[in-house]
Amino acid sequence: MMPFRPIVMTSPNTDYREYRPHPALTSYIVCYWQSVPMKGKGARLSSVIVPDGCTDIIYDRDALTGRYEWSYCGMFDEYFHAVSPGGDGAATWGIRFHPGAYHRIIREQASTLAGTSVLLDDLSPALVRELTELAETDLSVESLDAFFLKRSGDHTQSSRSIQAEAAVRLILEGRGILSVKEVAGEQFLSTRTLSRLFSDYVGLTPKKFSAVIRFQSLLSDYVRSGGRNVGEASASFYDQSHLYHDILKKTGKTPSQLKLSDFYNHS
Image 1 (cartoon, rainbow, N blue to C red):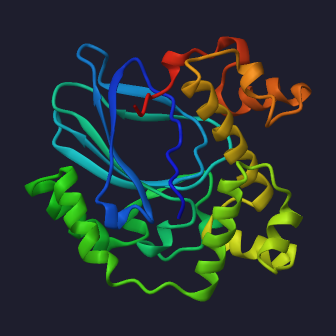
Image 2 (tube, rainbow, N blue to C red):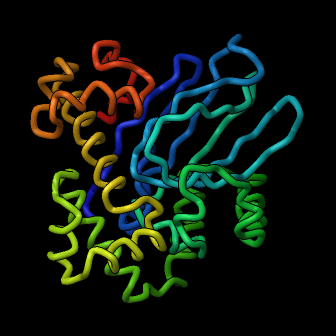
């Protein structure tokens, strides 16, 4: 999988950070991330999550009650609000997977999990037991690397999953601009076969996934330019008449309301 580091919207209520995985894991894990609540912000915190083309395994720990929860967040194409525990000692960890790569860990049709967050225990109780044991001893970048390095040797990709990842790679390389017909043609597939692959391994349709990657490409250019006018950054990706509505749909803000400080800086 080509290098892909999506842009995420940060919350003023939390300290959010990303960590690179071991080089041997970068073909399917984008990053690990941690979100720690700021002091005095309340017992429950809400954050805006923008579409990033990825899926996540998430661990929430509430230090006040001692309760924890593992969940799986599928792929989505609109922004939504996520709630996490606040208070001293609370923390959220995440493992972010490349588009279509989650199936190396969880065997479930991607489209059934799109646009939703479910308890990981409902998908893989055995995985939850292993991850919980890890969390109770030492949840860190190093321990997560060791955990997934051990599991990575157990997976053999099918020819269909390889086809799906190749199509995803084309869309990423084209920054979401290629048409569905062009992507299918490059893979010597019919558009119907491509759609079935995306239903099984990605979650969104090829058209919706391309729209998310186009949006992410816009955000990437906007952030890397130091926050220049969104309209200027969008020239390569959007018909200007559609820019306003798509940004609003995917961030909850209009283009003029976006600020560079809204987003996590990878540098």
